[in-house]
Structure formats: C-alpha cells, structure tokens
Length: 444
Ligand code: ADP
Image 1 (tube, rainbow, N blue to C red):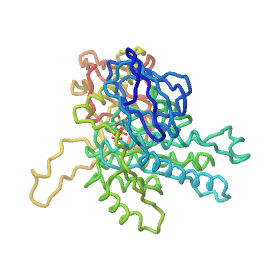
Image 2 (image 1 turned 90 degrees about the vertical axis):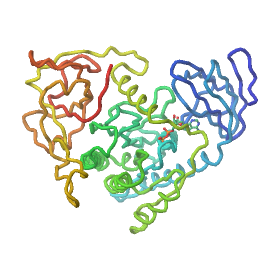
Image 3 (image 1 turned 30 degrees about the vertical axis):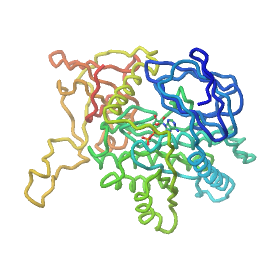
Image 4 (image 1 turned 180 degrees about the vertical axis):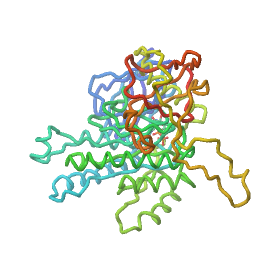
C-alpha cells in the first residue's frame, strides 16, 4: 500500500474506484478519518474530517474519485484494492431502481409500485452488504417529486429493508425476520436503523427447522407491508430491498421462490451464481416478464465466516440485544408468574424421522400445529419471542401471524414457586403474555 506510517497512524491515498479493506477484531478499535476527497463505507458517506471508530467489523472504505484516508490504530488487516467492477454494477442496479421509483411516484395508477428487490446468493456472497449499499444510495438520492414528497415531509426515499435471514440477521436478533424502514444511510458503526422494525419470531436459526412456519411468517409480514403501501404512495414508490439466507438449493430454493411470490418481488439480484441465475430465469423470469433476474459480481473483499464464527455471531447478536452493542444497557432479570403466561411452540411434538417410517410414508405431523408448552426446566436457556396480542382473543392463527414485540431469555424455571426467571432488555411488564418458543438457546 502507499500508506505513510507514523506510529499507529497511517495515511492512504486511494485512487478512483479503489477501496481500503479493513478488518478490526472485537477487542480492538481503529479510527478512520477522511482527510480529503470522497469516501463511503457500504454506501454511507464519510463526512470530511469526521472520524469513525470501528471495532469488530470487516468493511471497505470506497472512493468514486479519490480520497485521502487516515487510519489510527492497528487493524487486523488493511489493504487497498480495485473495486470498479462490483461497485459499478451495484451503482447501475441502483440507477435502474431509481428510475422505477420515479416512475412509480409520478404515475397516476395507484397500483404501480416501486422496485422490490430480492438479493440472493451463497453464504458470504456479500448479500447483506449489497442490501446496505442499495438502501443507503436510495436514502442519499433526492426524491424530487414536487408536491408529493414535500407534502409527506420527505426529501429522500425511505425504502424498507426486509431481512429474511434467520441465521445471520442484521437488524433484529437471530431467529426472527424483520422489515425496517431505512430513513438514513446505514451507518458503519451504528448499523441499520433499529426504529420501529416489524418483527416476527420464528425461533430457529435455519428455516429448515419448520419451513411451513417460516413461510407463514413471511406471508404475514407481506400482508402488513402491502397495507402500509396501500396507505402511503411514497412508501409504495420507494420499494423493498430484501436480504435472504445463503441456502439456495433444495428447500432453500423453494423458500426463495416463495419469498419472491409472497413479497411480489420484481427484481431478483443474484450475486455470483450462474446456476442459480439460470434456474431463476427459467422459473420466474419467464412468467410474463414480471420478474427480472439480474446477475451481480461478488466483491473481492467479502470475508468468509465459518460455522463456528456464525454461531458466535448469533450469540453476540443476542447478547447485544440484552446488553446493547457497547454493553451500555442493563438487562433486567425478573420473575414472572408461570400461571399467567402461555408458552407456545409451532409444529410441536416429537417428530418421527422419515427414515423410521415404512417405505414411502412421511411424517404426518402438522408443521403449523400450535401447541402449548408446560413451564418446565426444559425451557431454561430458551429464547422466547414475546408476541403482540392478548390472551383473551387468541387462536392458533394468531400465533402464526402476530408480530413479535421483543425477546426474553429464560434463566431458570422454579416450578415449586410457580415462577419463571427471565432476562429482558429493560424493566417493566412484558407487552403480552404470549410467548413463542423454538430451538434458539442462549447462555448469558
Ligand atoms: P452475506 O450476507 O452474503 O453472508 P455479507 O454481506 O455479510 O455476506 O459479507 C460478509 C462479510 O464481508 C461482512 O463482514 C462484510 O462486512 C464483509 N465485506 C463485504 N464486502 C466487503 C469488502 N468489499 N471489503 C471488506 N469486507 C467486506
């Protein structure tokens, strides 16, 4: 690199369409500062002279024209690389989305929608990163639609980011799917906006644990989003950016097709996967031309993460839900009355493996059966979703369609006193008495 060292301070002179890739472990801190030129981290501009302190991140500082970047501290890796091909194609996609947004907001037809993009690819293809870039660019782009935007108090788009990855979620804890309006570029330190997400609790780190339940939740979310779009022309025009998990064959592929249909996706962006591109083109691209399948290159900077890292990342995500990303929160340990709460499981019952059944028979268990769970010590360490709703009017369908207000973790079940000890992010009574369990476990 052309860095000029001076103690732990390095200055890099980035050329146009190059990026500085930085890896900083969780136990380190590195400060980056834009001295001159223009630079962005995954679509979010660095203010000139402003410093960002990075910890526990792998990211890239990219410049379209040229930039002088100062790095203070010792990153675990730091190198410059050319990034034209990937970034140009992400920008081209953004430009195409922008055209659709403008067309949607200026049309008189109330049914014309803005772009609804689904980003797919293998694990570690850079899907979440592409979603971030697309959302951040949308937030930076002017939405100059005369009276419409001004009347609604917007001067930029507010796209909705939908995260369907229950294993490596970006916004809400693992085991959930969520939709969140993105009203500002995604900050490299603070991450996605956490305001008012629409969350559904699935309770497993892989959709394969109960695909029918997963599909039901995606459909429930899609209904709420559709309602929001009916009421709000700007929301309809800004559209959706949807992140998916990296499971693209077999049932995983089936779930992608389901998401495309449930969320009325009209652009599928496939990162670096020829077979998947071809499959999707044949499947959805040919159905009347409604769904466009585009191929995107993978950035050379994407870092791969092994299974162990993913598990640790999940644990950390749950921990930061309770303690804050900088351990700034005091989670609250409280005891609830076992008798006044209901814990459910979806698709419960011991499932006979198909291999244990007579040839040709399949397990008959209804995957959408909602079953109450007794408050026993089996619940210890269990992460439970607290559903919105109230006991009185509860039916099975509600458990499959109610969004989730938050999660709690069971620390101890004291059956003799009828108490369940839980950890919750803040004090106060829980928003409802409906708890949903799955296979997510967590140990403080
Ligand atoms: P996926 O969602 O497909 O699993 P991610 O977008 O989360 O992949 O990317 C994997 C990791 O690589 C993340 O930590 C991300 O910040 C990092 N990363 C992505 N693009 C770059 C890049 N150009 N330079 C450095 N790190 C990157």
